[in-house]
Amino acid sequence: MIDIGAHIRRLEPADAALYREIRLEALLNDSAAFGSTFERESAQPLSWFEAAIGRAAIFGAFLDGKLAGIAGFSAQEGSKQAHKGMLWAMYVRSTARGTGVGKQLVAAILDHARGRVEMVQLTAVSENEAACRLYKAMGFVEYGYEKRALKQDGRYYDEFLMVKFLDEGSN
Image (cartoon, rainbow, N blue to C red):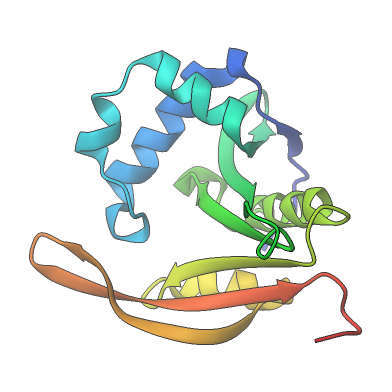
């Protein structure tokens, strides 16, 4: 892996067109990895993507000024679950894979989550070995396995349930 040091920042509503483009690319190219579909999201207006950026912390990795990867974070609502957050919608363009962009995005999510939640959860399609390796390298551990978590075109995909405790010393 060559670490080329992307510029990571939280996306703003003004980035909605860039976010829409990479999100639709992710849904088209790696459709099995996401709970949503290209058909559903490509039908949404730009304002829908602006609203998504406004509701959650979505980070972008920029290489040479171009959006090369994204990752989202949301904290759970409700007093009994407010200690948990979720990393979601992680995607790195094929041209930026193997450069450390994925690691930088996960690190940005974890930095953002610290002080907000005690743990960050995620799901990863079991067949996505590169993603599972990345998450494990970043300190996530498996705590469950959901068979048939996703279904697309008559095919099922299993998912690993993973967690990273931010207060490392406690359970």
